[in-house]
Image: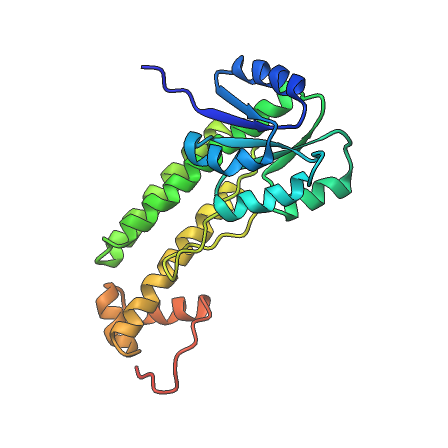
Length: 246
């Protein structure tokens, strides 16, 4: 059964939408387009596209305002802005507003394919982060944490082997205290280390809270010696309450 991903195009020029749709279809995607900004949210909900191509200028309104509206509705949806004039100012403004990237008209298919590769990779990493968060709930010992860390590293090795020169983001949306917060533009290897550290720090904090900040008890819960725990507390800058005991 055919299972192509879809891409939604939003541009006020019907001829350009048709041309762009034909080009993108040749890359193996289902394409849908509209010239009406008012239809965008409902089409996103219906089609669940892998990304949105959005023109910067419309006869009524502008693409930036629509971008902000889309990001409120689907913050995780990659939006690629289309502009007829390339400038650093345009790039900065679109990225600040939440766009994944931007392209100048006429569309360069090679540039577009590179962006699609980044989007696919972002989705894989995002899925892995969600998988990590689910597995984190099952961690019952420090050994489990080490095993989880090894799984993360293995995933990173596979990604780096496939894309050795790519720069990756781990855009993890806040989901309460369980979110793993990774800075935007870091290498996948750096992101792996940061994710592992944050998982370990969270596990240490949980143990400290569970033991009412008695470090010897927390070390016992974690399955490590008190000296190792003390070193990790210092390394992570964990501040203990005044009532904490050894």
